Amino acid sequence: HYVMFAGSVFALTAGAYYVQMGELKPQHPAAQPVVQSADIEPPQSNQAMITLAGGQKIALHSADKGILAEQGNIQVVKLGNGEIAYRPSPVTKAASVAYNTLSNPRGSRVIRMTLSDGSVIWLNAGSSVTYPVMFAGSERKVSVTGEVYFEVAHHGTMPFVVNKGETNITVLGTRFNVNAYDDEKDIKVTLLEGSVKVDMPGADHLLKPGQQARIGHNLQVIDNANLEEVMAWKNGLFIFDNADIHTIMRIVARWYDLEVIYEGKMSADRFQGKISMDTRLAELLEVLELNKVEYAIENKTIKIKSVN
Image (cartoon, rainbow, N blue to C red; front, side):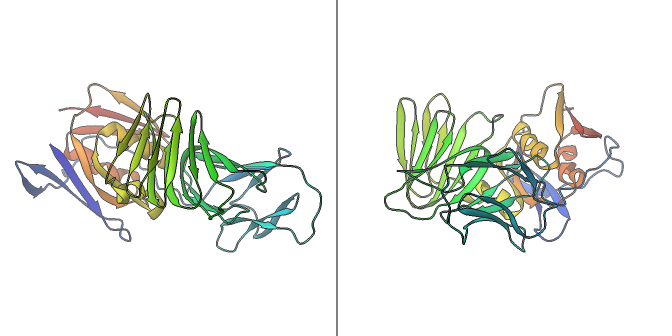
């Protein structure tokens, strides 16, 4: 059966429900939880870091606003709202192609960055992107791990290419999301606006808005993807639609920076609903207790045990 839960973006309270025989019924937590456990707060700040071409690392959360570094003809700037931008330097000088890497670790809030061409990217927790400081040549190419949302600036003669392993996503100007975590079965490319071409060995496809490409052993295209669920992380929400416990816990582990250990056979129940990502971990997991799933938190490890 399905377990439903809901929460406000602003309020850190959540009601938990379960669906049985087509009827939605409230189910309240027991007075004594199944397992008394510690609790973990959501990330309070961003812990992202930029690695410059020479190997120097800049911790963005502790850096003052202003110019962080100069890379050839580009200045790396931290804006007053904490965003990072690559902007032309007022002094032009000869420069070779240099690459930087923005890394956003697990347990870190989402970070936004503007590349030198005006394209804007957002990185989820446990993600990174490697990119040239200034784009040159016939294409604008970046490499990603984890989950990154792109709003690509249009350039008619220089396509923007996102690379992950043997998969390439080519665009001219568009909005799309790439979920390419190493612990997920497939790479998922979801198009919100414009068009993108997805290439993998032996297959390619031109996506239309609302479609999602799933790249694994083969290329599968899904029409009418759940865009609200895909973009939930950028909007500060957990949204699950027919998600099993393993899917939920992979997302939870990245956000709260946890290791997950499973003990016993897991419940086959599917979960759906939404709750703020600013929710404390124990409150998020109350819905599991309602579905007869025990959990215990010890330091940065969470043990999950199904008792169905």
